[in-house]
Image (cartoon, rainbow, N blue to C red):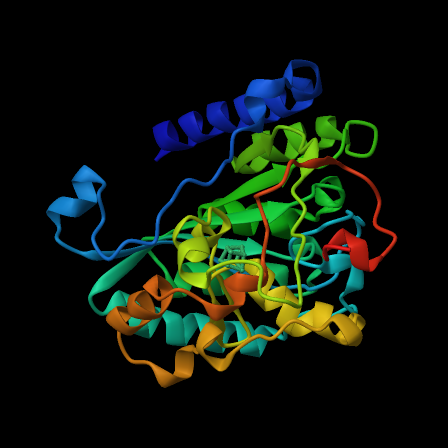
Length: 315
Ligand code: SF4
């Protein structure tokens, strides 16, 4: 155990130090996408494949809709989301239902706790404990913009350590001035947490959504990259954050440009019983995709959001 903690500590210190110096080393090569998991019905990973299990690669679960950063073209639509924390009871109920569907005969490789900004959730330690309780074998990652990380109390670090939660800082803008990495190093050394700082996200891809049909939905879905990050939110499963965000935020903020979200584009996880149903839903092309141009056009530099239509919609 001591030995394990030692190595965890070493890794934690390494992560912290690399985070500390990261702003100096970031370069073009750091822009490659972090998440490469696939939602497959059979895992192509050798080790897990041998178990002949059905695997869900990754599911993102937003626990807070709003954010303390304000990124133009945010693909979770946080700048136009009203402040909202998903109640802990709802989160727990969703985890329970998802685990019932998946754990019976399959496995979830990564549960990705996200926002908005998840560190704004007032029951965050309870959320993380519940995630581990319901998904004992899953990698659990907490992704934050990092701006509140150095202000976290010991209970946060302790919970991450005890429940093997990996913290990922998405370095959306150069944040070395805003984040006290010395303080983070101290916490990592004390609690042996696993933390990673991703390279700065220089660019945000435009979604260029359209009310009119602009693609063949089937082909568009097949070749779509962001569908590798499906979302479970308040009992509803979406193939990507765009459909979720349009349904919840965009259509309310810009009603005259509302984009149809069809009932077949959303899956109620309380209406299914097996992992097969979840996979079958995921694999089916979504009609909504006919309106989406996300990841097609060139990315644009990070900028603060003005909450304008053009940040998400092709004008
Ligand atoms: S809505 Fe856009 S981002 Fe989402 S799966 Fe369809 S094409 Fe991909």
